[in-house]
Length: 217
Image (cartoon, rainbow, N blue to C red; front, side, top):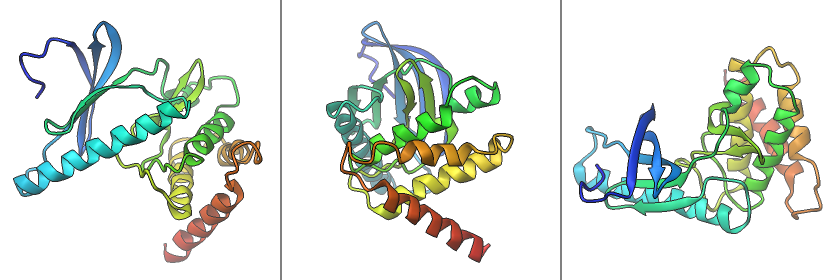
C-alpha cells in the first residue's frame, strides 16, 4: 500500500487487476496519472517475492526512462518505490487499441501500431506482453503501455516474439480485420534507414517462430 502519510497521490478507480499487478487511475500533484502496484503472490516465499517485485519495478522504470529519454511516445515516469512495489506514470489519454478496433475507428491503426513497435524495438527494448489492450490510441499515435514483462536488453528472438504475440491477439480478437497483421508489418518495416534497425530480420524471426508454433501445434 502507499504510505498513509503520502498525500501527493489522489486515488481514482481501479482499472485492472492482473496476476502480477493492480493498475489504478488517479492524479499525482494534480496531473492525471496511473498507479501500478505489484500484487504479492502468496505461493512465493516472502523474501523471494520481495526480491522479484523490486527487480521488476526497477526494470519497468528503466525501460520507461529510456523511452522517455529517446523521445519515444510512452507514459512518463513520475515516481516509484521499488521497496514498496509501485510506480506512478502519466496517463496516456485515449481509448485502448482493442476498443478502437472493435468500434471500427477510422485510420491506419494497425500500421501505426507497427511503427510504434519499431520505435520501441529500435531502442533495444522488447515489450513482452503485446496485445491491443496494451496500446492506446492517442493524439500522438498508437502508444504502447505496460512494460512489466519487457526487456531492456532484448534480442531478435524477443522482438520476434512481440510480433507473434500480437499476431495471436489479432487472430483471436480481431479476426474481422483480415489484413491487420500485414498492415502491422508494413508499418514496422517503414523508414528502414532512419534508425539503423534491422526490422527485416525481426519479421523473418517472427515468421520462423510462427512456423515453429504451427509445427508443434
